Length: 112
Image 1 (cartoon, rainbow, N blue to C red):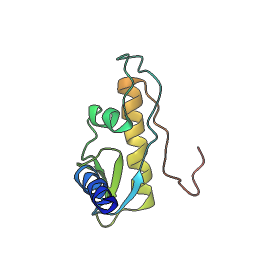
Image 2 (image 1 turned 45 degrees about the horizontal axis):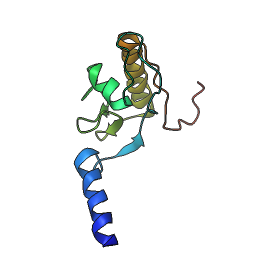
Image 3 (image 1 turned 30 degrees about the horizontal axis):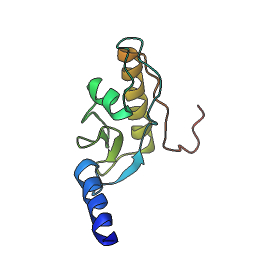
């Protein structure tokens, strides 16, 4: 019984998250604030998707097509690629929806 539950959870993750590629895990914390533009509260991935960032690529870093709150390494991404991509996503979501996405990934050597 327990093995079946574990298998079901693993399958659900594989169906909804980019588990077979290099990621840092969930990128942004789910915001709790209400958008002043839409009056809604959404998950981070929903804001990222609505801002048109699904599949957005900078250098070797890309927003996952499968789950927008994951940045993936397409093979040759630098730390600068990831930082620039993340900050680009944050700026687009802020501009379009008034939502400030907070980093969930711990970024060493970055202040702010």
